[in-house]
Image (cartoon, rainbow, N blue to C red):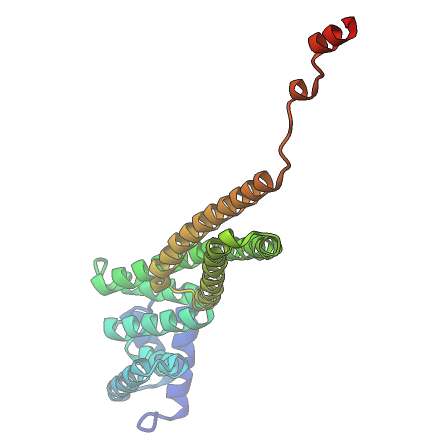
Length: 278
């Protein structure tokens, strides 16, 4: 702050910051005027500093558009010292905290967002932009918790399905070695279908891992879609397994020797007795 960079103004900034943090509210006009008188800061210097806080706000908006959250927060905190009741500055600061929370998910940023929004409500109880920011934060936290649960369940399904179908594929390959030629075409189709399903499982697994890393509310729709695909794949796997077992049973039936009824092997006792009588 070049125009009001004297030692008294620096102390004023420090004292206002400490006061805001200690009581978690915006200092009143009376408190600010009293502090300025104690430090010997003139009204003109305060007005000049307030003018400069608008420059801080302009720079902060540029940083916000580039998602440079740290720089935006620094500018807005400085702007807020001389304009503590400026709703635009406060809302921009809450937005910057929210952007940084999305990036790092720190508890400190969540608390900063809520404190800043609370200051906005102290100035204007029905401030719509603050209500919107608070709703976004609450939905994002809820969505993040849901994503963690869904991602964990989804990965478990993927790994379990892959294990089942690796085993199923191995059993089919072993079965194919002993099958007659008339069944080879059908079994080849099953094997090709299993290979295709396995590749799709790998793709879903990769996408789920990406979803788990991003963790934002826009991924929920994609996760639901992936879960539906996993359900369909599992149904296809079960269907293929049943077909494979049926083929194996049919082959066993065709390879079994023809069994003769015990009655067919019994000698004709009547004839034997008749012959003996002669």
